[in-house]
Length: 96
Image 1 (tube, rainbow, N blue to C red):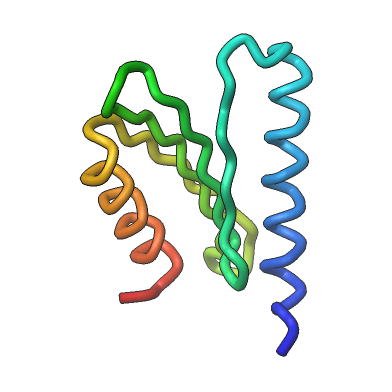
Image 2: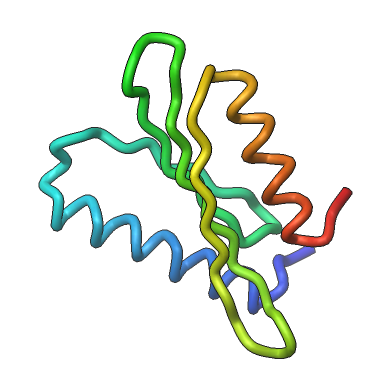
């Protein structure tokens, strides 16, 4: 089954944003980027210290028929922070 067009378009916009950001910054701090098939979300990650992670999580949604991008930053220990970011994104997308 193919992915709904609005989510695919939103993911394309988020990925283009990351590419432009990386080029503009000349990759002084390497960023990892990951998205999710079937969901319009994108995570930028970097590790400021051993065992620590900073995640900049973006979710593309539709509110009242208008497109919106929600952004939240999560910092902390790697496994706990990743779970926290994932739960936040799922809630924004109307998932459990």
